[in-house]
Structures are given as C-alpha cells and as structure tokens.
Image 1 (cartoon, rainbow, N blue to C red):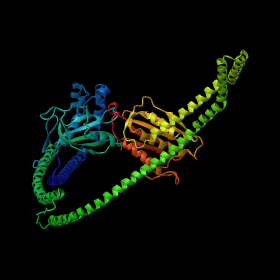
Image 2: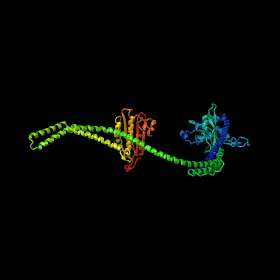
Image 3: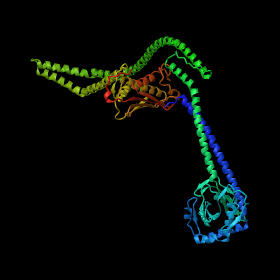
Image 4: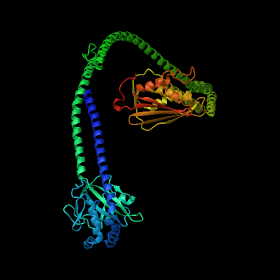
Length: 640
C-alpha cells in the first residue's frame, strides 16, 4: 500500500519523538538503577567491612575449630550428589543429633551472637541466642532503614574445583522463626549464578559486593562477602551479608512504570502535534501534486491556487510560470517535430534503400566467390569426361567401325548368288580375324571403364549444379522444415575449393538432431560465411589447419559449432565483429558485412550467433537456432 506524504511525515515525526523519548527514558532509568545499586552496594560493603572488626582472634579461632569439627563429623557425600544440588538450594551434611550438639557448643553460640549483632545492628536491643537480651544502640536511636536479611559465615567446600558450592558454617538464625526456616550448621549451599559473590570473594581474597539485585525464593537482596583471614593472610572463611532491597527494587519498578506512563502521554501528544504539522506541510504539497498530475495528463492550462508567503507559495508561483512556458515550448516543439519528422522520414527511406543495396552487394560478392569456386570444381570432372570421350573416339570407335564394315561385306557376299565358296571363306576369315584383334585389345573393358569414369564426372557436375542452384537462391523467403546437416553438406560442397588446400574439415554430427523451420538458403549463407572466415584466419597462420563442425540439440534449440585453429580474435575486436563494416581483413579483401548479415539472418530466425576466441588460439562460432514442432514445421511463413 502506497502511503501519502502526510502519513510519511506523521510516521517520521512520531518515530523521531519515540526514539528520543525512549532513549532518554531508558538512559534515565538505567542511570537511576545504576545509582541505586551503587549506593546500596557501597553501603552494604561498608557495613561488612565494619562488621568484620567484631571477629577478633577469639571468634576467628572459634570459626576454625567449628570448620575442622564439621569436616570431621560430616556425612560422606558423593561428589555427584553435591553437584546435583540446584542453584540457591542447600544440602545438610550433619545428622540432626550432631547438628543439635554443634548448635549448643560455645564456639557456635559465640559466632551466632556476633552475626545477630551485625544483622540487628541498628536496634536498641538484640535478643541473645539462645535467650536473653543484649543492649545495642541507645533507645532513642531510630532503626536503620537498611535491613539485613541474612548474616552468615561461609567456608570453602573441601575438594571442590571452584567455590560455587560452599559450606554455610553458621547463620544468624539457625533455628526456625516466623520468617526463616533456619539454617543448620555445616550446610552445603550452591550459590546463585546470577551474582556469585562468595565465589568471587574466595577467588580474589578481597571484599566483594554484588553487581546486581538477586530475586529468589528468599526474597530480593544485594549480597556482599568480607574475607576473614588467618595470620598468614590466607582466607579461611567469609562473612556474608544479604541486604533486603525489596523496597528499593519496588521503587525502581514504580519509576519504570511511571516512565512508561510519561512516554505514553508524550506519544499521544506527539501524534496530535504530528498530525497538525503533517497537515500543514502536506496540504500545499498535495495541491502542487494535483496540479503536476494534471500537467502530466496534458492539461497545460492548469494553474495552482496557493497564496502562502512561505517557500511553498514561491514554489507554486514558479510552477504556474513553468506551466505557461511549457505550453509555449510545446506548441513550438510540435511544429519543429512535424518538420523534423518529415526530414527523418525521407532520410529513413534513403537509409533503407542504402541498406538494401549494401546487403545485396554482399550477397552478390559471396555469390561471385561461390560461382568462381564451383567453376573450378566443375572444370576438373569435365576435363576427364572430355578425355575419356576422346579416348573412346580415337581408340574404341575405329576397330568397331572396321568390324562393322567387314560384317557388312560378309553380308553382301552371303546375299550374292554367284559368290564362290572361296569368296565366302575369305570374307568370314577377315571378320573372324577382326573379332580376334578386338578381343585381344580388350576394347569392351576399356570402353566400360571410360564410360563409367565419364558418368562419375557427370554425376559430380550434376551435384555441384544442384547445390549451386539450392544455395544461390538468396532471395528465397519461405521457410520449411529442413535437416541442418543437409545445409552444412551443401555449404561444404560449394566452399570445397575455398578450404581444401588449407584446412581439414572434421564433422561431429549429433544423433537425433531434429529438423528446424528455417530458410535453408539463408542458413547456407551463414555457414558459408563462417567457413570462409575460418579459412581466412587459417591461411598464412598455420600449415595444418583444422575446422571442426559439431551439431548438438537441447529441448529448445539446435547448436551448430564451427571451431578453427586460426589466428583468433583479440578481446578488443571480439565485441565489434558483428557490427556492420567492421573488418580486420586487408583492403579489398572483406566488406565487413558478412558477420553482420549472418547475425541478422540468425535473429530473423529467432536465434543468435555466439563468438568465443583467444588471440593465437583460434575461434569458435556457435549458431543457435530454435526448434519448431512438427505441427508448424511446414508452415508457409516468411523470414524478412
């Protein structure tokens, strides 16, 4: 569907506005998101670094003892079972009674108490674990708006190649409460891959904060890991803190939807403003377009009524002036066209007459070459026919005439009643002697050989005359279904005197080549032209010339290929050889019309001629002619 200019402007304005608003809104949201994440991350990282000072030598020694004890008392777990723990899930490594004993140990209670102090650092009191209260900040201190969801101690899992599965040694809420199921000591935890804080902290030995918010079955939080190191500087445990950021993330989500609402309002406003702007811009353009359409349809009286003072108004005035000028120029041009048409018509008639004379001249030149060649070919068999007849007259006829004379003498003696027996014997003896002499001379065999040779010569002369008659009818216009091989043979017979001293012709005729509907005399003309060109390219270039004629056929066309090993054609000349009057032959040798006429004849038959050549490697010409069905093979059509 073709959109009008108005709607194109509307789409452009809306697209640009949406792009600007969308990019700006997205940039603002991402900037706010990054700022909130950075502020919360810095805060929890500071909290973790400050909280790590609560773990002095006593607490660190307690963590080490708990680590060694849990590794010693842990259930033997298959590595595959550990690897099968889903991300964010846990796997207990201590039996319930062992875990209960650990949770009552002084070391465990000491670490839990420190973790609870960290988790509830902003409260006035912290419930001691397992009972009692521990004073914290003064009572008038307000609760910190940032609330920790979890505080815990994690240690590496022995034998693990990376730190993705870790041991959560102690949690601030090891027993089940209202909002937490509790985490028993020495529990394997597979960290969430979306934000692997523990793995980064174990790997680098540096305090690490989360790079993004994590949302899972425990809530929405931001994590940090603080390494706890021994006296040698080796990280033996990590203090992990998870900050509850549900309210902040909800705020960001509200900001996002608020941004969508603003963008929607801007979008609606943009559409309204764009409609107004598009209408103001497109209306004058539409008027100009309607005027231009009328002019295109030929109405040169059209005038555009647009009286604005802006650029479009100037354009309308220019348009009206242009239409008036076009009308004047058109009237003047029409008269010039009439005068020029008359001149061109006369020139065209003269050109057609010149073209006809040129084509006829080329045909007559080729016909003269054929007649000269045929005369030479006829002269040879005619010579030995004459010689044979002279031999019959001089060698055969005298003995036969003598024999006839003796026979007549014997006949007269036999008719004479007064003839004596001696006269009869004498006449018979002379006849017998003459017959023996003729027998000894083998005149019968000689006469038969001479007459056979004479008949062969006469047959050759007859074939040449027939070929010349068929070939020379260049004015033949009617087409008929012909065997292309007969055309080739006819051309070869006519051109034999041209090529026999320079090239050996090899014929590779294809099987089952269908007949084609064509003017045979004109196809003969093409073949003879190509044959003459091949001979001219071979002469004075190579001693043992070769011309290979191949015929093939596909579903639609018959292909006649003539390949020679002559001097070839240069790449520059190859694209010009079918142009009239273009020739590479010397002055007086060629007219430059042979290939042009041949290609014209092929095109008249809905075919064409292809040429391929490399200089010094010969040339290949392929005549492509269409195949016609049997139904129209005898149609009386004409090739002009």
